[in-house]
Image (cartoon, rainbow, N blue to C red; front, side, top):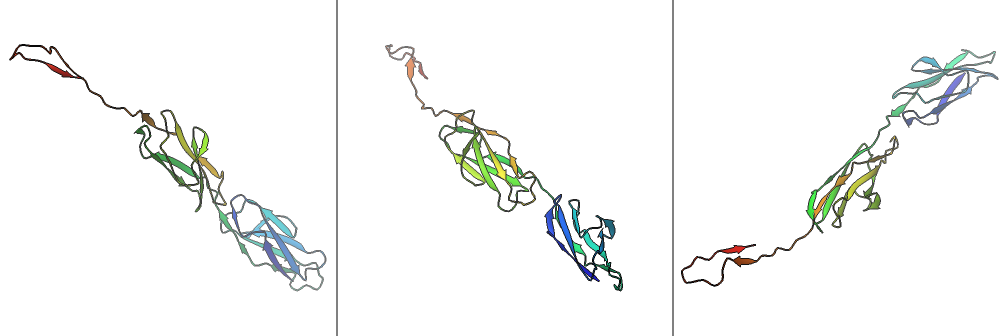
Length: 203
């Protein structure tokens, strides 16, 4: 007798169910099966075994006992299937501003820093809850007013992200109005005798 095992996958995220299927050769009409994980009995007497509790580098095998009266030996052990179990990761994101106090009409650049978000994360910027900007790690605007809040939502590209999105904290900016300076001059008297001190005051 002989037996081989085919898994539904060999690399999965932690907690994902994997099904192993045994294919016997010369197993007789009713072969029996003993599944093993790292040499420890698992599963039931079935040609399939499913588990969502596997750990990285776990090795799954099956021992098949032939029901054929002429089997010699009566058992066969499959080649081990070594599993790659990738950990689940939660993305993180923070947002910083190039400045938090500006004059009205001045451009402010917001920069998102993402972690555990995969190699190609996507970004959605928010201004007071409304979608703005493009799918980029930076957002620029010169139309802010005091009281506006900017934040960003990152969507991870990692297949094992859980959850797959994260929202940054809100960043507020103080926007001061643009002012035009002016000046006036006044004096305590504009009709005096010669050599009389005159006081001029600029406002």
